[in-house]
Length: 238
Image 1 (cartoon, rainbow, N blue to C red):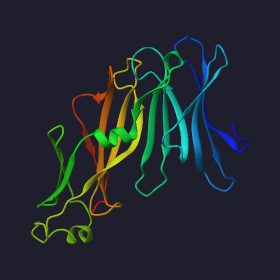
Image 2 (tube, one colour; image 1 turned 120 degrees about the horizontal axis):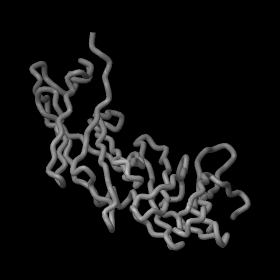
Image 3 (cartoon, one colour; image 1 turned 45 degrees about the vertical axis):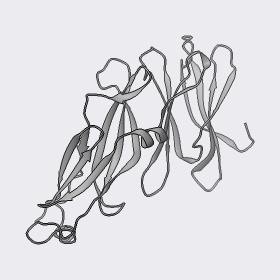
Image 4 (cartoon, rainbow, N blue to C red; image 1 turned 30 degrees about the horizontal axis):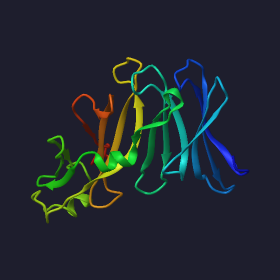
């Protein structure tokens, strides 16, 4: 470990399947005047032999790196969830899940792969203060009602009769958050992927898409066969 390296996060648990607790670390470097971390590396110390295993991370610079240990694959052995924050205005997160069964690291979730291979969305403003979010990949449609937004906000987009002033589309961001959740209480964790629905500009958040995912032998697949869209409350108009 380099002289200016720090332990950024630490957890104990059996991750190699020998029923003996192992030590799991995120190690990295940071300056004294910034919470930004660089050269972030996953290190596992075998609890039985004390041997160290070092796993470099493709994305290794971020804020607030943290660890979570839990069984995501259903084999009764803890996997390793690594979460990091980008710190940018988009609120993106960097997430990896590793299996370490038999001291062999296997990347089973990669946030970049999720962003590249997940769903194809359209975000289309409609007349009468509506926005339609279409997931072309799953053939799902969601409607967000904008009618409780401020008159000033609506006047920039709609005519007085509720028709659009011009065609307008938004977008869905890449992965923002990833949460471990045991939805069905069986001791095996699923994951909840959260993405922002963006309107005319990045700060114009219309809602979030929540995608539950469950390990299916080789990869994480959609759980419950559906997604959900949530919206933030707005100040009640007088």
